[in-house]
Image 1 (cartoon, rainbow over the protein chains, first blue to last red):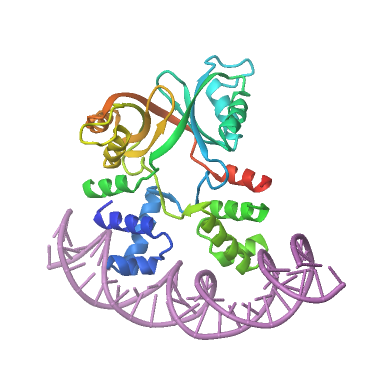
Image 2 (tube, rainbow over the protein chains, first blue to last red):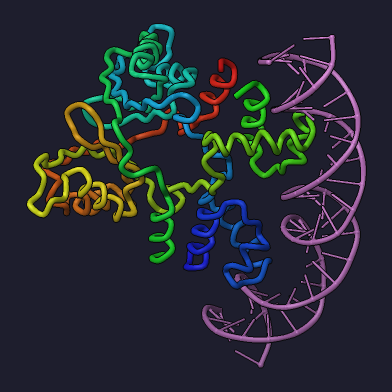
Length: 161
Length: 161
DNA sequence: CTTCGACTGAGCAAGTTGTCCAGCGTGCCG
DNA sequence: CGGCACGCTGGACAACTTGCTCAGTCGAAG
């Protein structure tokens, strides 16, 4: 991650449709260089994909909420662990966009979306359908102050390392 | 969002590098159709971008945490509101990947990353540098059970609407 | 001094893109 | 019922990009 990598990522971020050739022109380096840098970034795992970013709101799910789940700690009789069981359960619910185990009061935090505040109840019920979920507290996201971004981080990493 | 849109998004998700022509072959429709669908998805705001997805861990920031901030409610003497001031402040910190105002105990939830648990302290201090932040409680993400995804949601939306 | 890695600038065949066009079937409306 | 808009098809075209290769240059490290 040097300064050129940073500029490359910034360019791709601003105009994702530019190809390697166009990028090389913008950055003022040879095409092969851009290609090599990109390959390296992908190989290093820095760039994980180019998939289309979808907006849940535009898909009809404008409500975002964070659920803090409390998981039954004990392993169930059939041998399935509490966390794994819940993770598998959450993965089957399309409205669950992501989930992390965390420290602190709750055991697991999930980001979910819903068609409306009313619909959110349905989603929560779906989450609660697992026996391993003991409790669920809901925090609704009112507004996005900072939209998900990684570019500033990449630029900082480029500047330092 | 019909079934073809869903298949198209799924294909792009699985293999982002495929072009329009290849996609049309895979989906068994004409190239113009794929192009038209894509344009419409972008125009509708469903697809918000094709930017490269960066992995904070690969950038040297393997620690993820959720900060719940309590914001000073009163408007400051100079007229800057508490929320806006904090949002602007957070936006200047690269380690803050996203932030939302929320209902419930806290006023604002921010996702941050750090180089290590020790480094997390530095990030938290940076967040706390704003006068408008009254309190901050930290929840460290231990593991990702469900990685951020929107495809299942899109497929469900495609099936229904 | 030699070696090594990275970058440049060039070339080539093959493939893709953007943009047209005419034709066809379906559903809607007067 | 005729007419019309709309979306999809299949094809065409020039212009461009990609993947790949290669020789040459440059600076840093051994």
